[in-house]
Image (cartoon, rainbow, N blue to C red; front, side, top):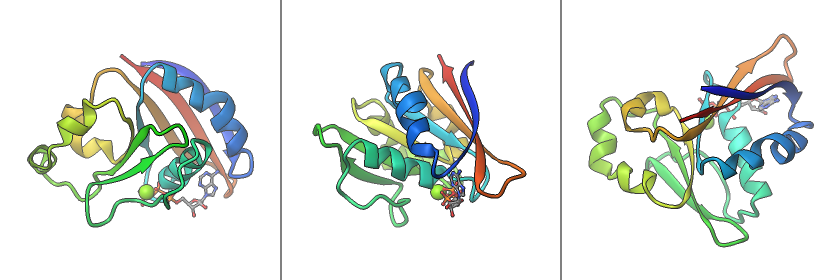
Length: 145
Ligand SMILES: Nc1ncnc2c1ncn2[C@@H]1O[C@H](COP(=O)(O)OP(=O)(O)OP(=O)(O)O)[C@@H](O)[C@H]1O
Ligand SMILES: [Mg+2]
């Protein structure tokens, strides 16, 4: 794991963060894992990223399925996963998750912990931590390869 950046920022500052720190990482890998406790801000950050990419569909955590599908302004596919409810890795396997992971699409993944052994080696990791200031989060971006 190679740490690329570490910053404490508010929601208002997050657009700049996405533009200046995060989108550049997509050159390394289209597979982005978002880690952090419930309410840390994984979905919130994913929404903002999708907004930047020109996604027009409404972005929310998949509830009835494991994945939501969007497309960017440039016509690239985005898969948004939430594995929170997965109890056995087999459930994701049966769902055919590997085909999604192996595709050329941008994959944005919440609760990857529940499918850890299925994750591609080459990926970007975004760790989100609460801070002492209610409106700020600490974001750490690393490359995994
Ligand atoms: N700097 C910040 N970045 C992200 N979210 C923030 C920030 N400051 C405050 N928040 C708030 O924290 C909450 C994060 O909720 P969100 O649903 O994104 O969390 P989550 O990590 O996806 O949780 P879950 O594990 O339940 O899916 C939102 O209400 C958001 O407005
Ligand atoms: Mg979420």
